[in-house]
Image (cartoon, rainbow, N blue to C red; front, side):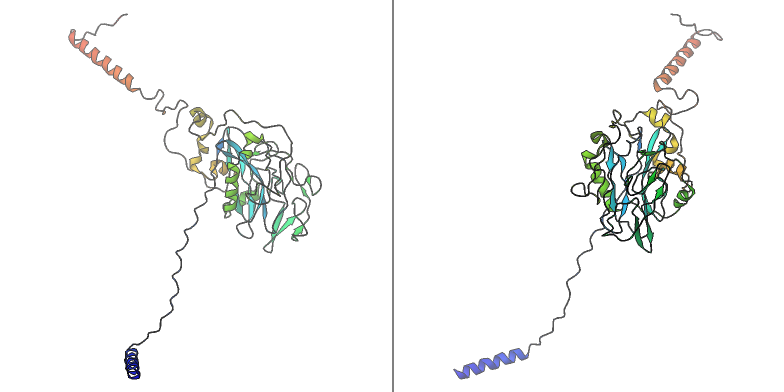
Length: 375
């Protein structure tokens, strides 16, 4: 028995001696595939509407939730159901040093055109509209950048100085009233909602015109999502709230419920839309409005973001290109001379009459005319 065990051990030892164990090199797991890039955020281009936006609602500005956030005032936008309110809210700027120029509605002939807001190193033109919260119609008095830190003007901005220490207090005087922390508390006084209304402007100041040539940054993803949520909320439609939205301002983008939501005050008469509300650049809109009332220079296809009307307000912008081709008459027919081309039926009748006259002339004597038809 012992001899058998010894023989087995010898055989096992010989087999193991012939095997060379190779060390296993460590190889990390392959990295996961890169995540697809987020979809490009497209901010809504300018809309052209045949009726003015409702007056701006009067509301209190909610407190700033985080140091560094900047106030973006509420305004009216146009959607499938007509005008809807985009609540004012506090947002994080895309980078240090940028300020928010609000969008605004402006008159372009007989229509109202919306010009989208943007971020930039200086405040540009926004129609001279007093949005409140520091946007008194010219520049921004609600705060300023100092050494890469944003400081808040407590005279026109609602901040908790216990939590936010970068503050100062500077009284702001505009053409309406003296704005301070106790008399107005960041409410809009004139309620004018478009450039050209009483108390507003249609031309930029020299500083606002210079801001046009500076690099601009589009609204952030949070801002776009905030507006999309407002569009989808039936309570924010002007036809529903009659110009007094229950969600006039929020502490954070898209936070339409809970603490920090401010309702509009019952100031001003109820607003009712035109019946039916109509966008000028809608295909269903009558051709007479598209062609006769609406000038060709404000066609949104020439500049879908700011529109040629923005050029009129911003001399620094490039001149929009003219649309080639002939103008279109109010009845939709292309202009061609004084009377325009004949219709196909008229051309066939004219050819038939000429041919009949020719045959009659050939049947008579040379030099004689065909007899006139008498009824």
